[in-house]
Image (tube, rainbow, N blue to C red; front, side, top):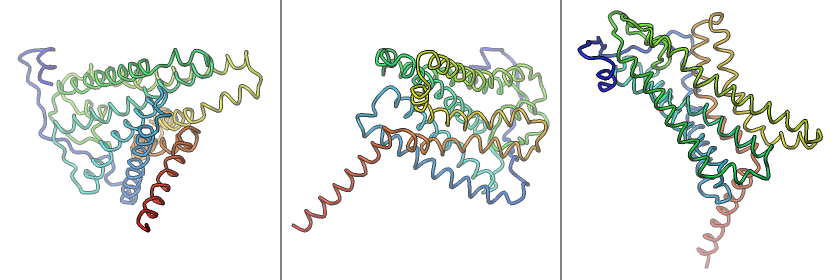
Length: 327
């Protein structure tokens, strides 16, 4: 960050506080029950996403370009919840509301990067579904391992650069009065509004970042499905089209679960209570990561078959071990 500041200007002194105070979930009635729920969500998320990653690694039939994206989504969900939930519990459950300045920006970086990658990963999966349905004969050529790895790597690079710029601009703010962040984590919007010097660049970023990270990906995904429906309506009968579209149910469930709560929150931001907004945003950040593995395990035939096959192999190995002991 020192390099970032030196590149933008020299001989400028910024007043950085020793710490910030996270206060978003404090004072909400019966909030301790929510912390228990968060802990449960985190444990289920870790187990579910680890299982999906393990199944994809162990079954050679799942080492396809599509499951490269599914593996990355499970990794991002696991990493994102591991960056967010333990810290939330540490801050609010164990009353460690004071978070050092540098730790706060690091916390923000990891949370924003993972949230961005969740959104971008859904674009990769929507592209996979679009090609599989509209260009089935060319699928092996258009969706290769090299292409999927390159696409996901480019998303990672873009997300990291975008978040680094966002965090870097925060380091050019001075904080002369309040250091209390009314959120459940180190939120960019809450931080830059506390600054006592010019924060116009941060104000611009606060509009650009959601557009690039949330609304533009959502528009791309919706356009891909409009294209799918339009093409199916032209070339397939209704039963054929419905059968083809059913292969998208898992992905559509992920998209709805990720974007609909955000749309509701940002649409009704001025009309809902701040505590309700904070709780809704925290659930939106955490809950999809827990449900994603169940959606793919329950709605994807390949993963269901793979899990059954691995469970059968485990039972066989146990039976063989017992037989060996009896000999």
